[in-house]
Image (cartoon, rainbow over all chains, first blue to last red; front, side, top):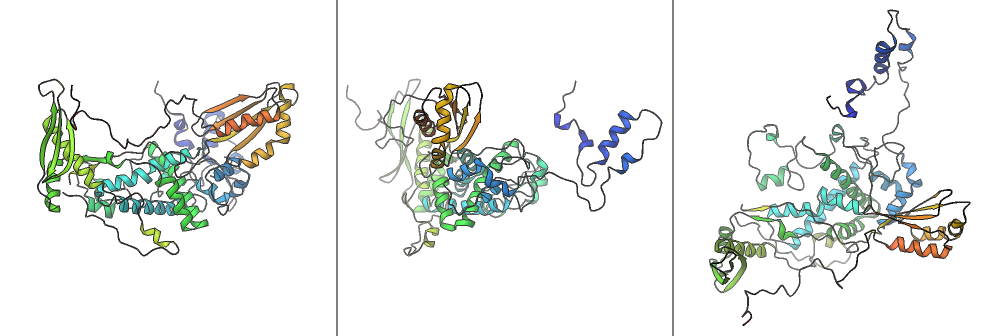
Length: 385
Length: 138
């Protein structure tokens, strides 16, 4: 027997369409199950099913009423667990928990707050990354931004806040639960930032996506915006992350810029991200030679510093890369060539991951009262090749 | 462009580094009106619980009767685990101690810690290498 998902048992017959919700289902059953005789079906059955013009049917709301926020113990506990200020009302927190997939009405869902919050989060993270690691290549910059404030990271943060999702969104659900569904038809218009590229429809041809075009056309993390191909996991992450973004948006709108910045710093920027694990070099030796030429150093030279077991099954070579008398990097590996490549990668990483210190000033620090005059930080021109 | 980026999601922040989130999110109380083992629990709910709940707004409290059973307090934690403690025949102040234990727990399984410090940072001194310096003279 062919397996059919329970949600599809009803098929097209139960598919809700505006204005036709009550009529077809009853008539279908009446004509197939009950009326086996040739006698005409009573006409009154049809009459009382059709709603009068202007009459509204009692319909369930897609999300709980804002007034119920004050009665929810979960919501009050969440408000207090995040140590939010008293200025942020519980209703705002309740609204932050309603995603557009649960309630498409933007007067009741968190779309506006999440958009505001995402711009604030991404701005603070981007300025921090730029000032702290001024030599990062753009591709690494995007991935670092994603590691701090991408949907997966923000979803992880909201789970660590103890946010739970409701089994299904609806009016009767506790307002302290996150409301989302993975219904793909509810996804339309919930994304922002970036443009859909012209070539997305032509699937089988390859188009190069350079960094410059990613800056202009793509979203905040350099990902192409395309209408389809949304997995369940991605949708779940987006819904959970929209709560974090909406909380930041609510803090910004109720308690101001500095409170929002403090919140972003303490919850999002305080996470440990290992940037050196993000690099993937294809031609490290050539790139290091180009870097030395660009910066006016002497050309790099690989020297074997020590070795052991050359004729054994597990040799170890330690290779250092020198530019004149300066040692740029060192690497060890079981073959000479790979040791040289590793040494080059270490030298390049130590160049790209230069940081002026842990306490860097960022442009938004100038917004504070009595800030010292701005001294422009050194920002490098970026990748070598 | 020979540098490419790999995707890596950080394994998670350290709670308390930046912001602290109390790990206990819900406390559930079960009591019986009739049974003698619930006597202390009933006294606790009447006298001490309102103050305890007001002092800990981060936690959601739920109280429900469970007739004919011993009284139980269950802590629910952010990591998804629960800690139930049976508080039969305990006095209100003994129950309060149990509640403080539940509130301050992280929800993880209890572990024996052998090292004084557990750090995710690499060692400042580095790891000793046999290939550097003079090495060991045998």
